[in-house]
Amino acid sequence: MRTLITNIKELLQIRDYETVKVSGKEMSILPKIENAFLVIENNLIAAFGSMSDCPKTIHDVEIDAKGKTVLPTWCDSHTHIVYAGNREKEFVDRINGLTYEQIANRGGGILNSAKKLNETTEDNLYLESKKRLDEVIATGTGAIEIKSGYGLTVDGELKMLRVIKKLKENNAITIKSTFLGAHSFPTEFKNNHSGYIDLIINKMLPTIVTEELADFVDVFLETGYFSIEESEKIIIEAKKIGLIPKVHVNQFTAINGISSCVRMNALSVDHLEIVTDDDITALKNSETMPVALPSCSFFIGIPYTPARKIIDSGLPLAIATDYNPGTTPSGNMNFVVSLACIKMKMTPEEAINAATINGAFAMGLSKTHGSITVGKVANLILTKPLNSYYELPYSFGSNLIDSVIINGQIT
Ligand code: NIG
Ligand code: FE
Image (cartoon, rainbow, N blue to C red; front, side):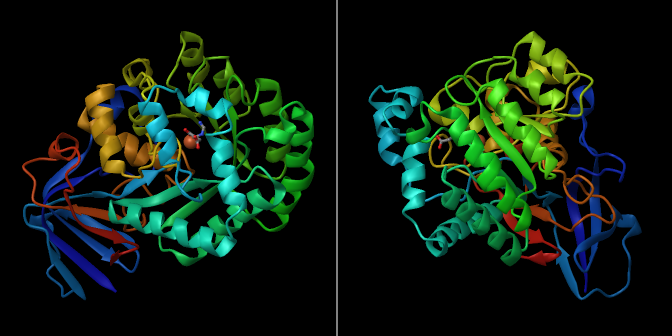
């Protein structure tokens, strides 16, 4: 099937096949064609260019995009959308003065979600999660990473990963699966960390490899959660079965976790609300993508990732939602792009690069997703008529998406 989109006011994020991420000053450039056409053949981008070169042949579907902007769909490289129930009571507790840490210390937080998850059947968990997946696709997400980490038992973690696998099999968008068994220590292992780490290594990892349940491994490397030593132990074993590390680090404290992740060749380091000069030095000369999660900072009132410090030192930066029941009950990448501009002082070009090509890199998808490139998957956002793409971050909270194309099909 061939689809032709004509009269595109601005076709954004045009890249050659070799560009897999953009760093430092390159992030301020967002290559575009004004008054453009784009051809989709089956599920791939087949051609694009200026309207003066638009093919005259008949196409199966023709879409007039007059006044509209077209850009690649968002690449959300960090989510926890498989979970059971909500944590809206904790939200009110925080309004009334408790901190995230205080709530976690009294058995709330991740352990609260783990309790709910272990009481939920795999089928119900799938249905709850599928709703969230459909919701984020409608807001322009075309590739997503989903983590486990709310099971914290052998059965619970495997249940989550099986749900992610089923989501992969039954949905059009590309999904990457991350094993986050090391999200928190369950209460019964509070004083027996090595006991839980043994369970991860000897009981969870072997089934993950035989059932092919994960692409990546994650650890919550943080004061009060997993130390550097504990994290490295898990990551080293996970790497032996082919899982690539993507790590939660520097959310609340800087404990040299980033240099450990770089040593472990992590694909990404995520959160980074607290970043030291040593962390920046560690990231330079590495292939590790820093990932900021601004709607988490917004929701729980913690500092925003210092994007300027990161980009101005020549590093790349990706942005993602962190959609989860505790710190970010939203998977809206449009809002993340707005927050990146408003709160992290990223320009619209930097924010869009961070949410597309760099997001694709942070989940190993930049050869197929994240830009308008011949041969890449035809995952596109068509906006409502806009004055310019600056309106995307500017009109925060408004839905400026007219339609979303996934694998060449209008959703
Ligand atoms: O990315 N920081 C660790 N994990 C999640 C939140 C977990 C939760 O509170 O449920 C995050 O923010
Ligand atoms: Fe997270």
